[in-house]
Length: 116
Image (cartoon, rainbow, N blue to C red; front, side, top):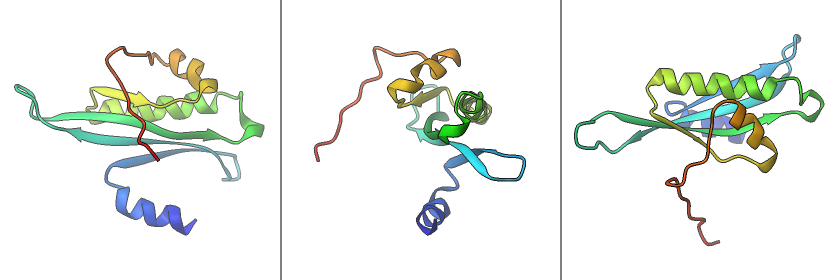
């Protein structure tokens, strides 16, 4: 846990965490959103993008709507902060969840995987 605490110390200005807990406070799910300032463009000096990251629900609580609630909360937070675009790198299993929340593929959003 100290690795996460150290990471959080240096990233709390750009990342927000959302958690799902049981009634007795045990964390059973989480989602993160990174708010990323973008380079200004002509006519728009304040641009913000967001990236949903590390969404997880413990296996025994999957199928209860927690993943949807976490992603929805993280997405609303990003929109409220002014993000014009929210991206996610999803597992194949979670694509339907994101599609239900109005996420869609884009022919102009490309990626390159770094060589190891």
